Image 1 (cartoon, rainbow, N blue to C red):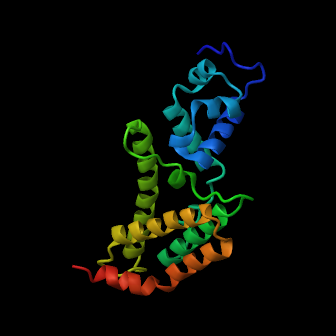
Image 2: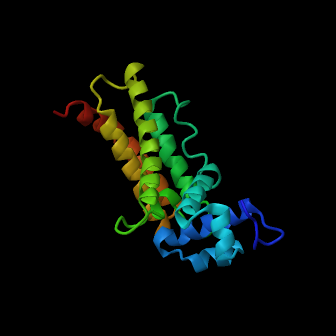
Length: 206
């Protein structure tokens, strides 16, 4: 791959982090090529030579987010002794992660999502796949709870997983709107407080 036009001190990782930051703040749609070249210190030919396209750069930036600023939220999922504790910990870790910066942030995977119309399908499909991957991991943890007797047989693990991830995504939007960590923790605690009723309703649905 040609490096012609790149600054001599070019650091791919640093350039990618700069792209991640601006995509996170402005979203995919509202981040222009001019924005990217400015923060990354690259001219357009160098940017495309290094990353291929805006869509590929964006998805690589999303993966960097998952390894860095977005890391740690899902760590306790498998090791928590009960499904309820796993979910409660997941939401409380989300509250901590989404409010760890000076300015409102939230989850990049949720907040940088583009409108579907006219967007490269790889971007929409890539974000959707990443969101569904996490939801599937949660569903598997709940199914383990059923197998271990922690949750009753017949629990609709798919419904609960969809509900919990919807709560988490909503927390991200609240964080972007400036909600405090205390507020987000309260949301996590409310979800935990209603756990038994939620499981019962799930297991008795037709």
